[in-house]
Picture 1: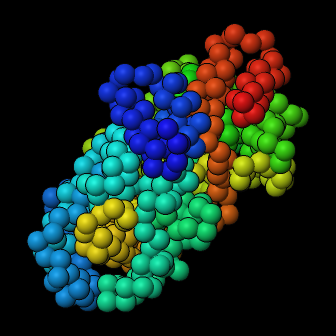
Picture 2: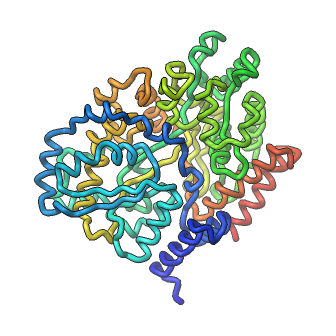
Length: 502
């Protein structure tokens, strides 16, 4: 059988379906997918936060306050007349935009357009299953695709470039949609592949500093602007408050992608990189070992449970009041501010990540961009197989419009908006107060995206490396199976280089 593009897509669909149905294990799936060029590193990030942390704050009372832009809705009503009665379908991970749209906002679109919207909110591996089966068959079961940044290369040929669609279909181009309003760093980092805009920026979790202001004030601590100061603050909190309150916390479960996320933050912060320009692993160089030394000292000020926690356990540790600071996902912040769920409501503050100990490395491999603000993200794309492309394009514009993003944000999603103008909107600023769905962390998120964002490398094998090879060996190290950071980093280097070259 000739292994052409269509056959490759069918085979990806087949092995994805087998994985979701439990017929092959995770390692086999990731290794096979990597050989086929499918980035699936983000599968480790599925369900990053519990329901309350990923858009679970929407209340009926607040939903009743929605009044969408009348000019936009009037335009939609007129533009959608030829498509009234059509149905557009989307399979998506549980994210703040998807949850807010599905639970509160889509009736406004449906009423204005006569277009029905069906949204399936699924675990990320099932989203990938639906997507791969759809593109392999070309049936167009789904009109819109949720595209994780690590999938862009695999599905760039299966979607409509939104820039071309906007320019070529003037009667369907939403007035004032303004493509240039999307944050440039996000367009480049989560929506562009080889000159193709795969979709429009949809969701952006990112690492920021978050700390207990009451503890900082009591102990006379300053907001950390350096990595050394972040460690010193953790040690001071631990000495004064432990063991009831720990200096910091982590997401360090062995073999889990969350452990790799923490590692990259400390690695980049010490001037290191995962790969050098020659494509060889560099985590075992001087900068990489300095990062491990720092991490070991930081871990001494964390709860013992961190080696069993992913992001959920890390988030819960702050929520329950047992950790004084964290450098982690900004999506936690509105969850922690919810007085009905959190013991630290009103006590948390946000700041940009501390500066790296030395200059960030600029010569790396596979498009890796070091930065202390480790990022993840996704795009919303229109399928080229859709039988309702125009209706789907109208929905995609509405769902990522400035006005809709404002409501996604103010309804309590927790995510950082992907549009510049949303951060400055008065409705968003009005939520800059203590409480569920707060937006008082968003200025920090915007600054972190612009000036501190780090992105992992882009290569097919990254799925296996980030979800298996690296976090498994790091987990073994923290379990005592290795005698030194040098030993574990050299072991990882050999495994990584063998996989990439082989």
